[in-house]
Image 1 (spheres, rainbow, N blue to C red):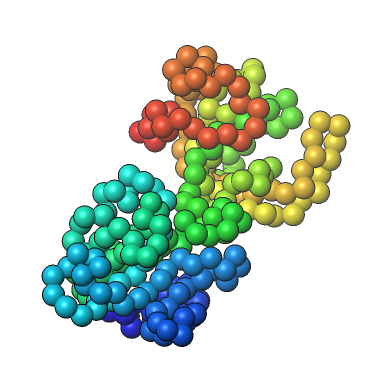
Image 2 (cartoon, one colour; image 1 turned 120 degrees about the vertical axis):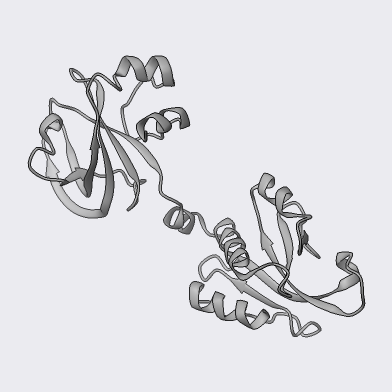
Length: 246
């Protein structure tokens, strides 16, 4: 299992093991290439140190889990322990003897990789998000934006990534969410400026669905979901997300 994990990490994350300890020359760490932080430590540890019966050593991998609820759920499960020789609040030790199957190990390695990534990399590898995006009908005919095309250019917020879902809110006099879209391309250079608007970057968004203008009005957003202003791209409460995705 140790060799399989080494091969998997090298292929997926493009990093090789490092062996920083002469005394424990079989123990290997895997680091991010940018911030040099460990995301995995593979080691041999005495069975008794993990509370296991029998003598001798067993291979294990230390992984970081920042989600305390998830960590507490994992620890105590078959083959998963509080981290040996590391901060037990954030790290776990997972046996590499087949007790924990490869798919689950891969998932836990990915969680650790994300937990230890640099801020820039975390933003890049974050899962898709949902955004409420404002559009001013005074400056752009958002009502008829998708009359002839399913993909259009739109001014981009730097926070939006490919795969994010965008709910397009038309400001007064419409004052309602009109469209559900997906960001399919981002960071496209663009040069536009007038007295009301400056655009330097656009994204391509694909239409996924339309909403009746009477369904998600500003008054309803304010009353039912606590949204009192839509002045720029913003996140969406879970309750609204549920309704928008029905």
